Image 1: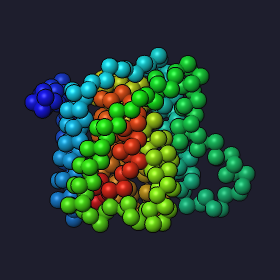
Image 2: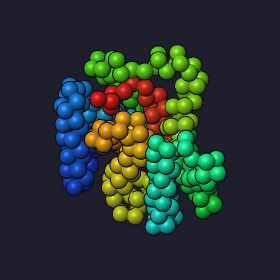
Image 3: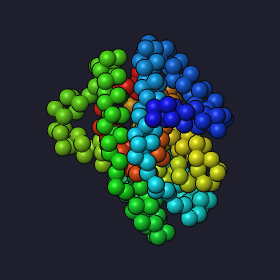
Length: 281
């Protein structure tokens, strides 16, 4: 089974040469960022750890494969909705973290707030329900949570040995409490982001007739939607861009998990408990 899973990954590389080259370039950029920031060892552990996670996911699904698929009724129209949602959501973030938010009047803030429905993809969820999609068609299916557990273990163990100071579980729980920490991580961040990613990568996959390309584009867009907040906090353009590049690989791993399990729940669990900080360097 291990040999079969490895051959499957090799075949995926061979069948998607252009995407594989793009991933190689991304990996080189991540290693360069690690070198520039003085965390070369961490970057060199980060990437193999993520690959090992994808291998465990494949290994599990060879043992217990998912027979489900994602239905896409109209890839062009739905991709347009998704891209428009990302643009409008980014506009809200740019306004919110422009540095002038506190100076805006209450009326101005009220006029801008509807864009929050695109930042958190509530508007997309409503649109998909109007288009007659059922929750199970949108990834809310009986979860394959078992592969999420070794993934969490791999990321956590890697961080413990290479960057233990990055682990924020104790700090977060002491400040917010366990329930609030889990709510923030799983509901506020992971659910919204992984739902958007699922919609984006499945629709773009059909639009381009290339699942790997849809997967890559969705994770790149997701990563760069974080930049308005990060730039507001650091006022460092290069660090903001480097930060977005750093999280693309872990976003790809979460998207790979969703693509393989055909369920949104495993990625939500892994993402929502991601207080390890292996990607932070």
